[in-house]
Image (tube, rainbow over all chains, first blue to last red; front, top):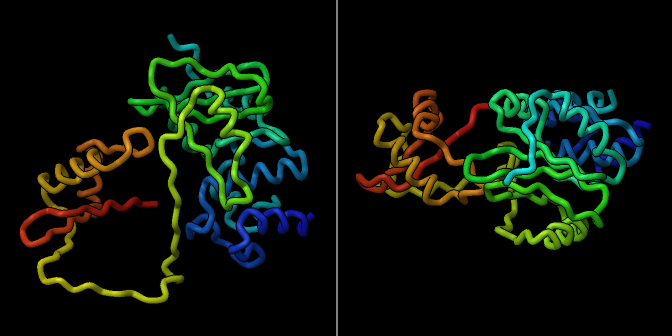
Length: 68
Length: 199
């Protein structure tokens, strides 16, 4: 699953190092458009239910946070 | 005559997500959780539901910003409002050009208002800094009401009225007092402003 998630993230933002970055939103690398794009792509791939409370910058600061 | 209804609680947004945001939904929604809460608190958020599609509208004063969740592009019923409706169609890279959703909104009589690119640079990516030294140019922290008023004049004159975020004089004074407003002078004439945002 991690590999699939990494694939998705890299498709959205091929310029970012998702495996090692831990402040993706805090340092401005990911913006709110990226967050929603990532959620849409994860939704398409895994058919997960997106909740409003998922839409917080903290949930997208790192690969670990995104996986959670 | 409006056919939109005010959103009074975050659970209504949750319900829209639950029913209308799933695999394959065409959406431009990029509002984060805290922004939803703020808008609801200020009574600025509205909704319109039409069969398989849902719309969230944010009252910006002179217009509504429309955030759509489209699951059936063959169905054209959209909100009716007493203000201009504006929506953004965002995409990254030409391979993601959103032809389908553009066609949907064109078929609803929406017209392209403006198109823009977004450029981004992190401080650690700067490779060279060129300094232009002109003794007539001075940049300083704004420290007078007159400079805040000039900032408001520039913002109102040059920002797009529907997609920009015009700032009140009160807000600009807040920025000035917090050290987030700079003013540029050419000689003794005000010639530009820089407004920062604390994150």
